Image (tube, rainbow, N blue to C red):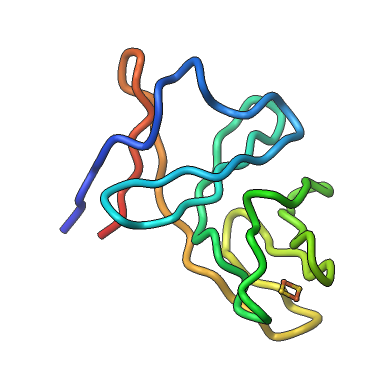
Length: 102
Ligand code: FES
């Protein structure tokens, strides 16, 4: 069952091509803006727990700032390293950004 919670104000999302680090009810979330479309994933890289929200965007991936594993924003997969992070549905509701952390 969906559990939509507030992530941030709509005006506080990253600029296109950027990522940011947010927190929603105790869950650390990396939010990426890819061409104006928002994508949310677990903030912590499964390799050595690098902060994905301090990384960068390359194509359709968020790249970890520590050792450059790249995670697809739609699947959370890093096929080359067989890594995976959870991805969360995200939507804008009025002036708030909501994420489904269920
Ligand atoms: S901690 Fe993310 S690639 Fe190593």
